[in-house]
Image (cartoon, rainbow, N blue to C red):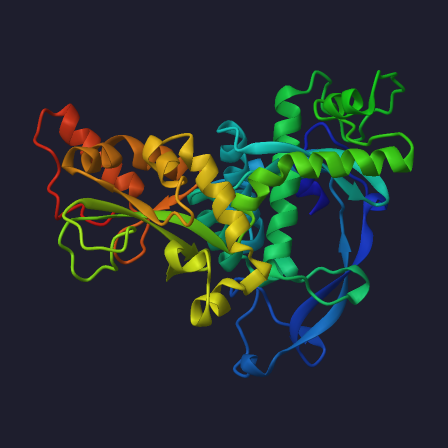
Length: 398
């Protein structure tokens, strides 16, 4: 294996002395672990009786720069070198690397400060909105069990979301940092002493440096971390949440829908505000019920310590910068949506839906499925081709 990795890292000398013992949990029968692939050994007939057993294996720790280089070699491949297959866990990590690269390329990141090993570090963090948040949910569900097998001192395996979050945070920080770093990339960050006018200047420099560690008095570092968290709060409120704001366009005369935001029957088109569960897209709660939630709605909205009022004020506030209609709806005590005429409904589909979808909220159809991208693109295609406006029934509930 060291020889195979040596072929990948042509400029790195790998030695047996670099390895260390590591605890790993594997399914086993008796004194033998089950093979990870039929290419290694046929699965036993009584494989269902296997139990997780603690084993000690030899591991080679890699610096982040080396891990990224290894994952780059794995993208779209089935073998690392002749005779060495790429396992499901390594292929999975390569897919997370591609997702992290897409986030950095689209600048869906924000600077932060984290406490790690009793040291404060400047870091770049992913900013997950719209379809990116949905993609993370899908990746967490797809995480191979082997990615959770290696633990510290035989401790309990971490949750899939924790493993994915740590991996994504590490990859995003590395890619963002070295996309702007003026220093050459090295396995071990250089430790050079520099003087800064303030701790904030040091933080900004560390975001563009190979060394992320911040130095200073503990009280001042804690204060900086708190200031950065407060600065991030408007964004984190609308991203790290079990519910997402979504908009639904409803055509006039749809008797299957709830009354209009003004509480009366209307011949106008309606853009209705709803809250959609991040992990269950079919679960939709009208915002009109969320402001003063009672009964079943209140019980549903309590999941994950969700503060519906705080979230809605932040999310609608961000969305209001993209639409004067949304801004106007905020003048009511409990905004639940707004009315449009046919021209306004068409404008919502062709212009506003895509902007809102990318910025802060989902735009869904009657079943709660995300439809902003398809609807907006189809509308734009129709306009570009000189065709008539999209059929109202076809796009009635985007």
